[in-house]
Image (cartoon, rainbow over all chains, first blue to last red; front, side, top):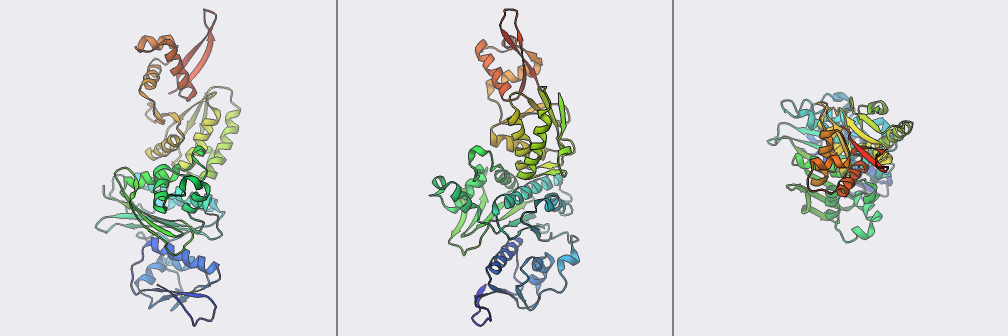
Length: 285
Length: 180
């Protein structure tokens, strides 16, 4: 919930209220960090309110949420004195902390795809194809991480997180990645205005995953990375959640591809820069 | 024949991303340019994983750069996902490569051959070294010109080795050899 605080000392302030004990997915957490940091970069005063240090507060602390929001953000009642992520740091097998994707420093995260995929070892124990699953997850991670470096062109760091849900009735792994760039659909529309002008956001996103669209054009041979991500996601029956600057798209797996007629789309969403992806890999065959 | 161990050119066990792929490609191109022979083996041993972007930049674009003068064969993939991702990169480009698994069996990955080209390719694989006339002995329904064209097409696609020699008739004849 966003509220403008008319009584705040600063001219433009935003208060984000997290409801008591609300459940926060890693996708939502990364969206929130992105929103907060984008607003803060614009000079807005941000208040992030919790009724109490409750379950949501604790969960966000353990994933390192508070380390990744801008230091100027006013967290109420207070920021954690000791970060839950620093305490548990890699030792929490059920939650992998948020990792930063720093702009211009791709070499610093060279090992990140295998590291994150390797963290699933415990969650995948007993699965006969655990090694293959990890390599598929590492492939998706590397492709979407590389896209952040190739296309996002922003001073704000990207973010990535991985969450296994072993004990759920349908065991799954959620992989979320966010950047604060221009957004994949806007980038493509600018590069291919004639081809994409009449297409909706959902149609473009479906086409990206079906055919591998690239802003460099078909002749470049590029765009195969996201198409491969979709192949892998289909193999695991994954829903895809895509947030672009003014649209929210939810793609449901078809038999062989992600089709726009099986997508849920909301246009005219509040502006949130960047491309924010979430894959929900189902672990049962 | 020249063998290149891809892992020697990579910064980590996993190759990923466009820039790392391009860096590796430039290093490979410099190394291959020194070699005057025809066949390059790219050994994938110890490469734990490559994503599609890296596979495209490091391997597919390198191969495209040197074809049809050089032929390439990829060896010893350490797992199936390495092959899947390389195949995805090849298919996006419409290219093919000969792969030899650790069990020694060669196969084509990437863009697959149509039925008639496949028949010619498999005949050469079986006989190991052939002329057009020799292929015709084993394949019915092809003219000598058609057969020559298909062999040339397979050579241009980088799937066969070709050598020219002077025939007794005084003209030029080509011998095609299997890669795998």
